[in-house]
Length: 64
Image 1 (cartoon, rainbow, N blue to C red):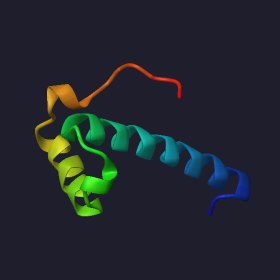
Image 2 (cartoon, rainbow, N blue to C red):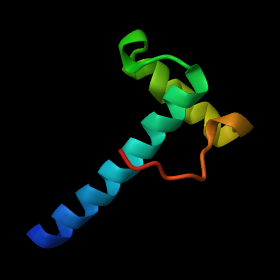
Image 3 (cartoon, rainbow, N blue to C red):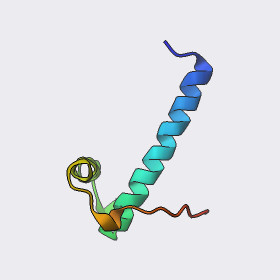
């Protein structure tokens, strides 16, 4: 079992990964999240594990 501090750290890491995943999805689709469903995101994400789209990954980190 994780300590509270470990849980917070791990959740922060996962949240950062989710941010990156959603940004890649939006860049690939060229549409905002309001025009997609969570199922679209999950299916696209799974497909990326099999056959990734080259234009769906960004190596740049953009500060907001």
